[in-house]
Image 1: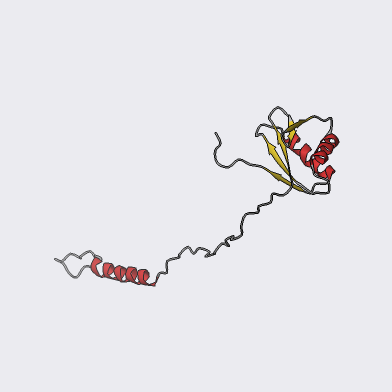
Image 2: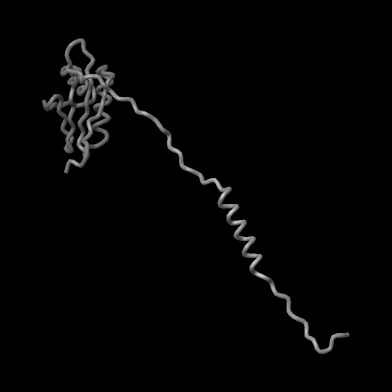
Length: 140
Protein backbone atom coordinates (compact mmCIF):
# COMPACT_ATOMS: atom_id res chain seq x y z
CA UNK A 1 0.00 0.00 0.00
CA UNK A 2 1.51 3.10 -1.18
CA UNK A 3 -0.34 6.16 0.17
CA UNK A 4 1.89 8.59 -1.62
CA UNK A 5 1.06 8.07 -5.17
CA UNK A 6 3.07 10.45 -7.20
CA UNK A 7 6.22 10.62 -5.15
CA UNK A 8 9.01 8.23 -5.47
CA UNK A 9 11.22 7.34 -2.49
CA UNK A 10 14.69 8.90 -2.45
CA UNK A 11 17.65 6.63 -2.02
CA UNK A 12 19.57 7.28 1.19
CA UNK A 13 23.07 8.70 0.68
CA UNK A 14 26.04 9.00 2.93
CA UNK A 15 27.27 12.48 3.63
CA UNK A 16 31.09 12.24 3.29
CA UNK A 17 32.10 15.66 4.64
CA UNK A 18 31.51 14.88 8.35
CA UNK A 19 33.11 11.46 7.82
CA UNK A 20 36.30 13.09 6.43
CA UNK A 21 36.33 15.62 9.28
CA UNK A 22 36.20 12.85 11.88
CA UNK A 23 38.98 10.91 10.13
CA UNK A 24 41.23 13.99 10.04
CA UNK A 25 40.70 14.60 13.75
CA UNK A 26 41.57 10.95 14.49
CA UNK A 27 44.66 11.19 12.27
CA UNK A 28 45.86 14.34 14.05
CA UNK A 29 45.24 12.72 17.42
CA UNK A 30 47.27 9.64 16.45
CA UNK A 31 50.13 11.74 15.08
CA UNK A 32 50.35 13.82 18.25
CA UNK A 33 50.17 10.92 20.69
CA UNK A 34 52.48 8.52 18.84
CA UNK A 35 55.93 8.08 20.29
CA UNK A 36 58.50 7.21 17.72
CA UNK A 37 60.95 4.57 18.84
CA UNK A 38 64.53 5.69 18.72
CA UNK A 39 67.38 3.30 18.35
CA UNK A 40 69.61 4.02 21.29
CA UNK A 41 73.28 3.34 21.17
CA UNK A 42 75.39 2.21 24.01
CA UNK A 43 77.58 5.17 24.86
CA UNK A 44 80.96 3.92 25.98
CA UNK A 45 84.37 5.46 26.25
CA UNK A 46 87.13 3.07 25.33
CA UNK A 47 90.30 3.12 27.39
CA UNK A 48 93.47 4.54 25.93
CA UNK A 49 96.99 3.34 26.53
CA UNK A 50 99.49 5.98 27.48
CA UNK A 51 102.33 3.59 28.25
CA UNK A 52 105.53 3.52 26.25
CA UNK A 53 106.24 0.57 24.01
CA UNK A 54 108.32 -2.10 25.63
CA UNK A 55 111.92 -1.61 24.62
CA UNK A 56 112.89 -5.15 25.51
CA UNK A 57 111.41 -7.87 23.34
CA UNK A 58 110.49 -11.06 25.17
CA UNK A 59 112.31 -14.23 24.26
CA UNK A 60 110.79 -15.47 21.06
CA UNK A 61 111.14 -18.52 18.85
CA UNK A 62 109.92 -18.03 15.29
CA UNK A 63 108.68 -21.21 13.66
CA UNK A 64 107.92 -20.92 9.94
CA UNK A 65 106.01 -23.49 7.92
CA UNK A 66 105.88 -23.16 4.14
CA UNK A 67 103.38 -24.66 1.73
CA UNK A 68 105.69 -27.59 0.90
CA UNK A 69 105.90 -28.70 4.53
CA UNK A 70 109.37 -27.36 5.38
CA UNK A 71 109.94 -26.09 8.90
CA UNK A 72 112.39 -23.41 10.01
CA UNK A 73 113.14 -22.33 13.55
CA UNK A 74 114.58 -18.82 13.84
CA UNK A 75 115.26 -18.89 10.07
CA UNK A 76 117.29 -22.12 10.34
CA UNK A 77 115.86 -25.13 8.47
CA UNK A 78 115.20 -28.14 10.67
CA UNK A 79 114.52 -31.76 9.88
CA UNK A 80 112.97 -34.28 12.23
CA UNK A 81 111.13 -37.57 12.16
CA UNK A 82 108.40 -36.97 14.71
CA UNK A 83 106.93 -34.33 16.99
CA UNK A 84 109.41 -35.19 19.75
CA UNK A 85 112.26 -34.33 17.37
CA UNK A 86 110.63 -30.95 16.67
CA UNK A 87 110.27 -30.43 20.43
CA UNK A 88 114.01 -31.07 20.87
CA UNK A 89 114.75 -28.53 18.12
CA UNK A 90 112.54 -25.99 19.88
CA UNK A 91 114.33 -26.61 23.19
CA UNK A 92 117.66 -26.16 21.45
CA UNK A 93 116.57 -22.79 20.05
CA UNK A 94 115.49 -21.46 23.46
CA UNK A 95 117.83 -19.78 25.91
CA UNK A 96 118.49 -21.89 28.98
CA UNK A 97 116.15 -21.11 31.87
CA UNK A 98 113.81 -18.97 29.81
CA UNK A 99 110.18 -19.40 28.82
CA UNK A 100 110.01 -18.01 25.28
CA UNK A 101 106.98 -17.22 23.18
CA UNK A 102 106.62 -19.57 20.21
CA UNK A 103 105.44 -17.59 17.17
CA UNK A 104 104.00 -19.74 14.38
CA UNK A 105 104.22 -18.28 10.86
CA UNK A 106 102.34 -20.69 8.62
CA UNK A 107 101.73 -20.35 4.90
CA UNK A 108 98.06 -20.19 3.99
CA UNK A 109 98.47 -23.35 1.93
CA UNK A 110 100.26 -25.31 4.68
CA UNK A 111 98.35 -28.30 6.00
CA UNK A 112 96.65 -27.94 9.37
CA UNK A 113 98.48 -30.97 10.68
CA UNK A 114 101.82 -29.15 10.33
CA UNK A 115 100.56 -26.35 12.58
CA UNK A 116 99.19 -28.87 15.06
CA UNK A 117 102.62 -30.56 15.09
CA UNK A 118 104.24 -27.26 16.14
CA UNK A 119 101.62 -26.76 18.85
CA UNK A 120 102.19 -30.27 20.19
CA UNK A 121 105.98 -29.85 20.05
CA UNK A 122 105.73 -26.60 22.03
CA UNK A 123 103.63 -28.41 24.65
CA UNK A 124 106.12 -31.26 24.88
CA UNK A 125 109.02 -28.77 25.15
CA UNK A 126 107.24 -27.07 28.05
CA UNK A 127 106.59 -23.74 26.36
CA UNK A 128 103.30 -22.36 27.59
CA UNK A 129 103.13 -19.25 25.40
CA UNK A 130 102.23 -19.75 21.77
CA UNK A 131 100.94 -17.26 19.25
CA UNK A 132 100.21 -17.09 15.52
CA UNK A 133 101.43 -14.44 13.13
CA UNK A 134 98.94 -13.01 10.66
CA UNK A 135 99.21 -10.69 7.75
CA UNK A 136 97.29 -7.45 7.97
CA UNK A 137 95.47 -5.98 4.99
CA UNK A 138 95.74 -7.44 1.52
CA UNK A 139 99.30 -8.48 0.98
CA UNK A 140 98.86 -9.26 -2.70
